[in-house]
Length: 506
Ligand code: UN1
Image (cartoon, rainbow, N blue to C red; front, side, top):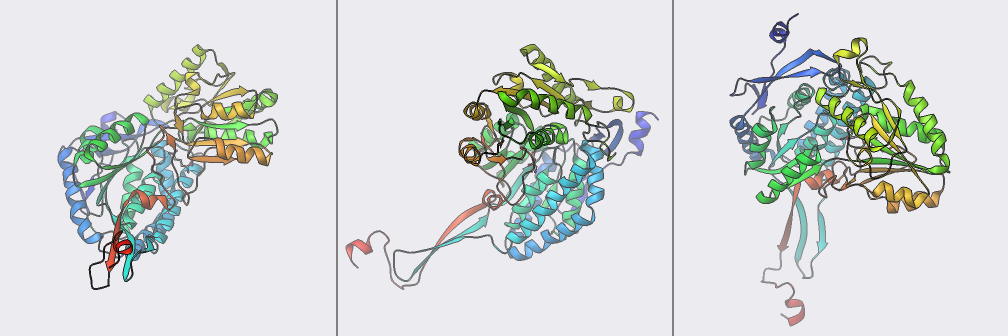
């Protein structure tokens, strides 16, 4: 079949603005491809422009007036409905996710489950949205602070968790009374669209969630620039995040960034090595290493380095690579050819820096794999802490084993990157475990568990170049999407002066 014929039978999808599926003004589209078989076109999606974006913001801005007045428990009912619909359609969404971004089916189900968890949790927030009351220094005066929604939230998401990450942002934003313009990654518009379909089916009024596909330049930039958008929430590369944050700084616009990581597992000489090997394998090669929390470094005490490295490589060799829809496969493709190339360039960088390639390193082109973007799980040994492969985010199935002399050096190496998302310590010594909790410089710390696998009811995010001080998920998700409004009610019937009456007399 020729490409033109493929394209002809491919479904063309639309944007979702003001409760309707609408074409982009441009009439231009882009294709979403299956990374396991690049001949398979998932669909064509609008290459929208600034005018389409403006219409989406118009709709969100208009809808905000009524949505913010809808009682939060009532807003939450709709989110709970979405949770039920996500549960009903979990398998369908998961399968489409595998086809669109490659992660293996079990993990794709986990991705959808994370959104279900978030929907239930966010719905619960509808009956909390806790504010504060404190005593006033004066009689007959009441003091409190309540949460107010910000307005229109611009949501910009990556492809690696195409349902979970949008849910972390959109659902708390909605329950807090905001409306949303959602721009998904151009690698995963289809599952993002299905997520939006579910929200619409749950009964969100028109304009409360708007969905628009296209490039960063033609959709992302106008979204950021629009003065009616009060907050941008972005997960992506540090480079993109820094640019957006810079511009939002100038515009005095709230910006929450969730960016890169260079996460590490530390394995001490007293660790349970079986457990550590299991954890490192899952952390490094789960989602083909395409998580911002992926274990791209394993820092190992020299006394157990050799044994760990041998066992780890043995296990890495056994991983089955292939289409994620086959439940026998452990590792799927990476998202596209560009990523594949960039990951493989890091293999060359590692070799040139003098790291020892213990296993992997190749782009796989045998048989059916040739049509996809498959990279071998790759293990480098004898890596030095300052090498590029130990410092830069690779975002692929490549991990660096770094030998260290002791616990203190392990902590120093773990902390020695520009990032600070997720760090882990494997030890059986409770004192060391608590010392690690105290000294590891990251937003998330694990003890005896890998760097991936965060749960939605706790804050998620990182320090240093990983973020800008905000946290997603947990109760902190609400912090991102609300303003504090401090309220004083004076029921004394006469003028009372704070800081003065109490000291000067009446
Ligand atoms: C990400 O990689 O961007 O903790 C998110 C984890 C998942 C979320 C990862 N729950 O690995």
